Amino acid sequence: MKTVIGIPAYNEEKNIASILLRLKNISEHIIVCDDGSSDLTSEIAEKLGAIVVTHTKNLGYGAAIKTIFLKAQEINADALVTFDADGQHKIEDIDKILVPIKNNKADIVIGSRFLNDKQKISKYRKIGIKTITELTNITSGTKITDSQSGFRGYNRKTLENIKLTESGMGVSTEILIKAKKSNFKIIEVPIIVSYEGETSTHNSIIHGSSVIISTLKYVAMERPLTFYGIPGLVFLIIGVSFGLWAIQIFTNEGVLITNITLISMGGVILGMVMMITATILYSIISIAREKK
Figure 1 (tube, rainbow, N blue to C red):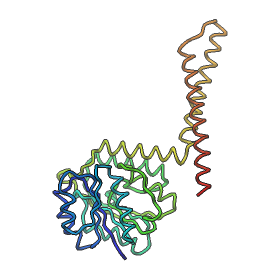
Figure 2: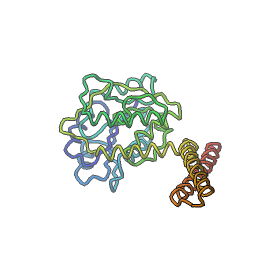
Figure 3: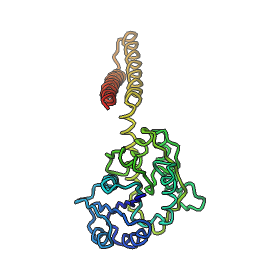
């Protein structure tokens, strides 16, 4: 089985050499996506024999993962393991990721920080990851413990069928949503991530915001009647209720209450717009699915 290791990297000249030297003992096929680095990341990776694909500017984590997916397909990978360049992941855990794929027991394998009792993780990070993971599970229908782990394995079928569009951190959620929709088997294995020195280059607030926006976008695309229709109906009910209230006051007292009337008009207009949007999007998406 041809195993490829993919590394998204941005200004990782301090870490990339030591990581590549150790990874070469596991696979001779290593892809480094230099996502617009301003340092020597590309030069170091090339000298150490990695396949380097360079973005002319920083496009984001998701764009790097997409490039790695495409390059892995191009070189006919049977399995791809994505591995961070910041030194957090343990190379000895790669075998844990690969075994279920080699044994045809999974299409996607996720290294989970929450399945290992020895994992040390700060309280704020744990709360953030679990919150995003729960949102991902609700959206995708999965039951995983660590939706934001970048340490993953993919088989050939996954690489060929999942087309990525997200450029930011939301790509991790996008993959899970599309994999679940395609009925791919997803399992998790325990790993340990090192947070010594806070090596992560991803801002937690930006990361969380990106994932939430990505998730909401897919909910809107997959369930437009739910995403737009239900809130639209609520606004419409509120608008009509305030409208009836305004009419009642006008009938009894001959006075038109401006605030109540404006709330009524706003609720009805917003509700109608959202419900029309839900109907149009549902129709467009249904036609697109039928054509497929």
